Image (cartoon, rainbow, N blue to C red; front, side, top):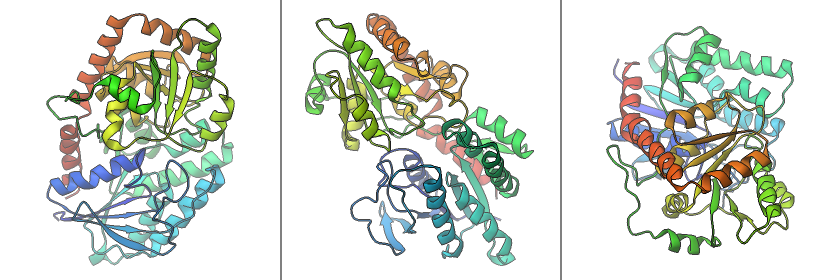
Length: 418
């Protein structure tokens, strides 16, 4: 049976500026480019600030048209002010309950991003009770591993991790097809579910400047002018762009900035944390008084890539113990910007492996601000190495993380379900 109508179910979608929303949104565009009729069922924009965005305060279901031809249905759900474990579960549960009873039309294929795991469970349950004539094929695109994440980033109890794992296994074993965003995820999911037919559909660089065959270096944007527009001081800038949550463990960046400040000297390395998230307020309090630490709100999309390119070093951090649960989405943009990456992460984890595979940066032990400060200082003193690391990441991005490569992978994945 051929596939014509595809419905994407994702708790996160545009206009959320970061995280899974970026990929669920571009997946809709990509499927449209491939000739499918695409609809989206999603939640209320809330990430990364964890509050309903202005213009989306309503509590009833709503419809809108995205990019002129994609119908988007929004299902209201609970949004926790501080996304602790119970609040996240309640948010997913309220979305999943709405999804159980929502009208999906008559899609040939439903692609659900996980997160949300409970939305995937709801769709499996719907497929059980659907009449054969109206039954849809269900594909799950795994962005995060829930059981691993609960243990690594939230310190969940063994019993809760087992319960979450049972739900994941329930979904993985009953979906028509599974795709993951990294080869290491595939090994985990294959072992966990007993399925051999797990595909890899990598997240891709969503920066509009990036083409499949070459990278445009944002001609006409002078880094000096960009830095002045952003309010950055003179001297070297280390930039972390994206979510500020518990998983990121950004205390290490604040403490590294403090170590840098205490070293004194004529000029300091400035640490810029650009974005939002549930940990931002605590981080601001923790770094109060540091003259070389700057917090910024997310910048408009047309300035984001220029900001990355105008930094000297791009920073990715993960809390100690986080190793296998996710691949930071920021890395695709970092590599595209052709700037060297410093990663304060578990040396044996997925993030470290991705940075090393790209040859794009250096790895520093997670949670070690002194080592992070020293590594950044050493890197800044070696412009040739900085250039080599940046160019290597750029080449890896073109070869492995382009939208064209993603389109081929998605097309193959969807066709495998016909």
